[in-house]
Image 1: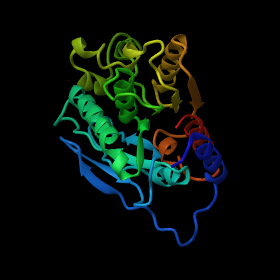
Image 2: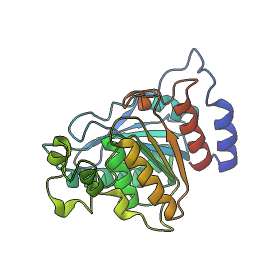
Image 3: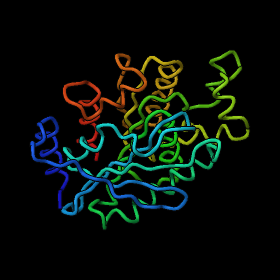
Length: 266
């Protein structure tokens, strides 16, 4: 079983080495966790490895658990089991229901990953776009259970009230459709659930897409005010899609910063 020292040393040494020419990519195994499914990328030889759980984006309305890009390969190089979860999307399920799906999936992983090569005590959660909102929400409100770290990749939905105020008191059409009931805004805002002493290490990245820079910096400020350990990555050189699609590919700054965070915290 890997201990923390061995994991950090091996990950740092191998994260950017080319994979052997004969290596076959890990084929995911699909499991139903309740309302939806998830994919586990693990070798039968794996045992007690740290786990990276990924929540895909898609404006809460599209995308699927196979939108993983190079993330499984990065997890493999870092000696981690990779899990990609599905959740019901609009209009089939509103964001409150999506939050419940994500929390249920993460807790399923914690309950079952020990028999699939992972260590249930060493879960790290990553999300992109809408998935970053859902990851941040479920980790910070506690419904995802205890995790070792949170990576939130380029979302603007950290505080629904602030989103409204950024546009002269009016939501943009997309957010008006997504968050129609003001009574839900507080519960669905990750910043509302920041509690001193209850926040794991957090990685926050953003691109130039409005209002992501303003919202990300506000989120980081609120986290640091609660004495959270925060890694901030300005991804202005990337697009909303390339900032996640390039993670795991060689010689780019977003791969390097994510790798460093995982090596230090997983």
